Amino acid sequence: MVLAQLGGSISRALQQMSNATIIDEKVLNECLNEISRALLQSDVQFKLVKDMQMNIKKIVNLDDLAAGHNKRRIIQQAVFNELCKILDPGKPSFTPKKGKTSVVMFVGLQGSGKTTTCTKYAYYHQKKGWKPALVCADTFRAGAFDQLKQNATKAKIPFYGSYMESDPVKIAVEGVERFKKENCDLIIVDTSGRHKQEAALFEEMRQVSEATKPDLVIFVMDSSIGQAAFDQAQAFKQSVAVGAVIVTKMDGHAKGGGALSAVAATKSPVIFIGTGEHMDEFEVFDVKPFVSRLLGMGDWSGFMDKIHEVVPMDQQPELLQKLSEGNFTLRIMYEQFQNILNMGPISQVFSMLPGFSAELMPKGREKESQAKIKRYMTMMDSMTNEELDSTNPKLINESRMMRIARGSGRQFKEVMEMLEEYKRLAKIWSKMKGLKIPKKGDMSAL
Ligand code: GDP
Image (cartoon, rainbow, N blue to C red):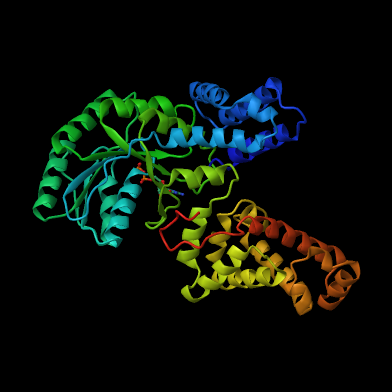
């Protein structure tokens, strides 16, 4: 995941600090310096990092830390708030309304994934019953119209563009007018990609905006954008009224801090993220769950949504009940492994939890992970009901472990490894104890 390394470094810095016996200004400064270093290494802009460090110092009260409150939590919360502030400047973007015509213009650097994102955005709304349409006002890049046309045709979304016309303003105006007449409620205008050095292209973008009067301008940004991010994003913001941001390629391994800087430069919220090349690899972006996950605090709301999405309806109540009881037995682990092997997508559920997917199911090594899960299950097949249903980790002593190893034809150390994995998962699971079970979309209970 993008920014995953950053999350890991921040968590380590916090851990080191909470290991210290006395928390004084020196220890706090060391921790904040470590966090700042992690942010800089992830390509977050220097000024932003400095401001963040100052804000955290202002918020964190050393006396509270000295008084033995949970130091890690206090600082983690401050870092959490600061990161949230960057990703969500507090004023919501214009939200188009179904059934009422809105024009949405997409801008961004070349190659940022703008054209792909226009179609994803249209497709997302189409699935929800909207009547979207796409206008290709990118006359600069050869093949842009073909690309949009191809995507639009695949998704059965009406489109407008021209091979002959070289004036993007003219095409944009014609397209918007046509689709207004056809009562489309979401008219999406794709524009050429450009860099801030290209003054003529920036002027052209301004003209398209002036002529089509978009209700919302969306800045599309590649998550791998590096240190140049802030200046580039600011240049766009200065030319057109950017109101929201979509960050693409979040499925990659980019450092991602540049994206944070760019969001800060536009002072606009991130509304969606792109998580792959396919049309449906597109997610609504929620700041708090994202930052929680980043800092290893667990993303319960995203987790619950995923459960509703991927676990078969008839299994949901039972799984949620077990979750809320917080008693993670080896049998539950067995059943979840079965789900993972049978259904695949349930692994997405667990990937929302800190520590689950990264170690048990690293991306790109699915085959090995599956083999490991099968191995674990063979060992569990040699367990007694008492062992499978127990919540007491001490029950399985050395002689029982030896029996399980013999029974399953595996080595003693493999049984030990499987039980370690169980303990690790049980620890994560136990955090859900007492969880109220919300209905889909209702996260207030969390
Ligand atoms: P544009 O020049 O900004 O219009 O960019 P394109 O839409 O042509 O996209 C550039 C490349 O990025 C294409 O190969 C897309 O398939 C790819 N792309 C776009 N969004 C994503 C995403 O979220 N994840 C991944 N992995 N690739 C993406």
